[in-house]
Image 1 (cartoon, helix red, strand yellow):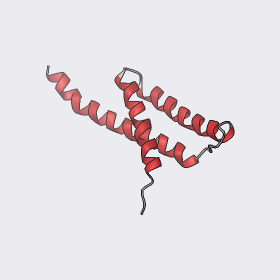
Image 2 (spheres, one colour):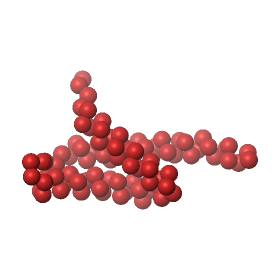
Image 3 (cartoon, rainbow, N blue to C red):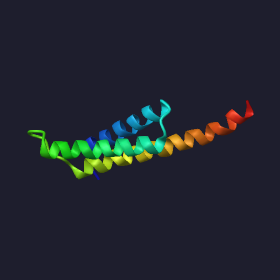
Image 4 (cartoon, rainbow, N blue to C red):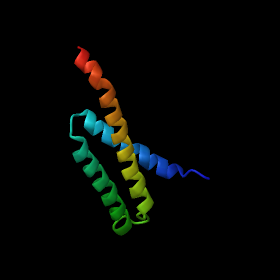
Length: 88
């Protein structure tokens, strides 16, 4: 199976965006909703407004998957660090 680099870029960029905001202290669920809404909005904008561009449902799905994957990673990191914080 061929891997679509564009979808991997969407996944990575939106995952990184999620991580930046949660590391800055924002609540993960708020960041997740905001990032997913932004991903959907950009695809709608490309479809209806941007000349020479088109919205892609699969780009929006890749954006959302990147956010959700980053949330899983963030949760895993937080749980691993919790026992270390309690030992101090």
